Length: 354
Image (cartoon, rainbow, N blue to C red; front, side, top):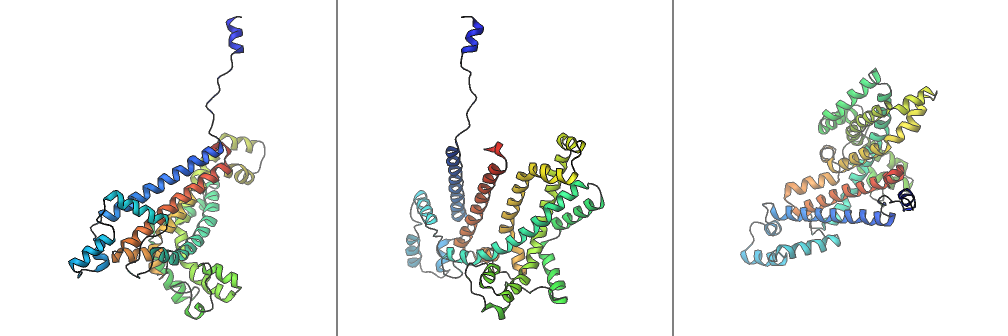
C-alpha cells in the first residue's frame, strides 16, 4: 500500500466537538452559582468591614456591657469568620436577611413590599425608552447626517446630560402644578387608594384585573411623568447604540449587493440588517433595564415614589446594614439573571452561539 493510499484510508481527525446542550446548560448554571457565591462573599465582607457596629445598631448607644455581650453572642459574632459566613449563606438560602432597623420587620418582607413599585416604574420607563429609542436609532442611521439624525442626537444629548432630579422638578411644575395633565407625587391619589385591592403589587395590573378604569387612569397619570423622565435616559443610550450598530451594518457589502439587486431600503433594514444587530440591541436593553431598577433613586425621591431606591436610600442614611446588604444582593441577582436571560436569547436569535 502506497503512502498516498494509507493517507486516504486513514480516518480523518475531527475538530473539537462542541459540548452537548445539557452540558452547556449545566456549565451556565454552574457559572451563575459561582457568581452568586462571589456576590454573597462580597456583601458579607462589606457588612464586616464597614465601620458600623452591628450590635450597637440594634441596641443603641446606651446599651449596657452585659446587654452588648449577650447580643454579640446571640448574633454569632463570637464565631470564626468562616463559620459566620456559613451561617450567612444558610440565611440567604432561606431568604432571611434579618430584620430592618427602621421598621423592625423582616428585610425580605420590606423588599417584597417596595420592589413591585420600582419594577412597575422601571418597566414602563423601559417600554418608553425601547419603543422610541430603537426606531429612532434605526431612522437616524438610515438618514445619517440629516436633520432627523441631528434631532435624534440632540435628544440623546439631553437624555444623557440633564439630571433626572432637575427634569423631575421641572416636569412637576409644568405638567402637574401649571397644566394639571398628570398626577402628583406618589403612586395613586388618596381618594382612589381604598378602591384598589392590591393583588400583585403592580397598581396598573391590579386596576386592570379589577376592571376599575377610574383607578387605572389615576395610577397611569401618576406613573407616566416619572417613567418618561427615567425612560429618556434609557432612550438616549439605546438610540445612540442602535444607531452605531446600524451604521456599521449598512456599510457592509451584503447591503450594497441587496440594494444593487433592487430590494427596497426598509425591507433590507428590517428583515436583514436589524436581524444582525438584534443580539447587540438586546444586550443594550437588558443593561438599561438593570440600571433603571438600580438607579431610580433620585426619581423616586423627587416623586415620593415608595419604591426600592427610596427604601435603599433611607436604609443607607439610617445605617440599616441588614437592609443595605439585602438590597445589594437583590441588585446583583438582577444583573446575573438578566445576563442569563440575554444568553438564552442569544442562542435563540443566533444559532451560531449554541
